[in-house]
Image 1 (cartoon, rainbow, N blue to C red):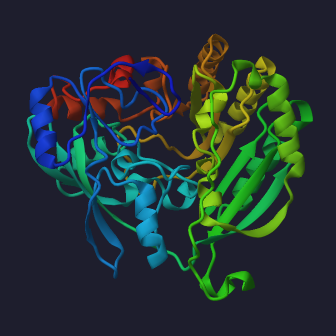
Image 2: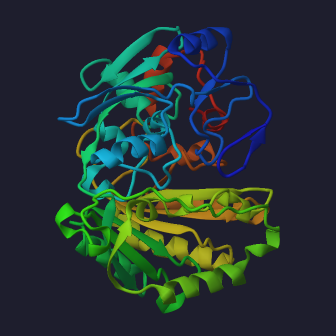
Length: 440
């Protein structure tokens, strides 16, 4: 049985774990339909194919590293957490990171992941120099801005539909410590938190937790957290001169599936009110992992949504329609009573270079929300879909598990992607349940 991180949907399917590029090419030749899968952290069905799913985690080798420039070449199955364990103590960190360290580098490219610094540094794909791609005919091509450029842009954010990513080259970013200087700011409503985002646009990192069940004058009340990598000269006395400390990780874990009634309007409202009230404005020094990966401290956290799983609904709205659109959508969520206590708001910047053909970010605000997989959630999503489209927005494919093809309307390079895919894979050899559902 296979499932995504949201545990919905679940399918029966064949899985192969190739250890070498040669084994990948053999699998391509032996199966009429397949899709690559990293560590299974796509939330929905983007890495599910009942015919054949290639588990790429055995291809996790480091190929080359230049300590002068920070240029790293690695196989696509390398886990981000392993990369951090190796290179953070040496003073290097990834240029862009998603909200979990348990993803593969190939998955980061395929989803063109974004982080808390998109307004400054863009998405991960904008830092990729080149990648090696196994195509439907079994050949391997190197793709970059200058070589096979159309295939390069279709692969970044292309959800694995152009081929199997084998190796990736990108620059790491130098850091002086494994600590973050965090500033927490409280916002009483949606307008205030958006004003704070824009007033602190010079911060390298920024993210807000938002109460999506608050109404009236409290609509959109939030806690905004900005961050900067701490410099060595600012190390706290408790650390002495140790810029990189011991990596102690939480062993907390959700031991079982919680009953479906555990998350309801009252429990989520109480949690949100308490979380906002306990937020203390001010500056602090926090560990890199608690700042970037807070949920990774809780093992098996999807179990809080019960056996049926959950769905994440993440959308982005253009800057010019973000305020009105976010207000309209938050009012509808609050009225439904199906609020999410994991609600994250971020500000995206304009892409400094050409993004991938199906890359999710656009200049504006993005909101990510988690809901139990239920009939009520599906019905609410249909309403939210219409609102997102009306305000010129789009959904994040790495989080999607149920949208229809109409939700691709505001991906402006969709037809370009289809043309490139049709040229290199005319029979749709690389296919997922998601690509079939969305007509990609």
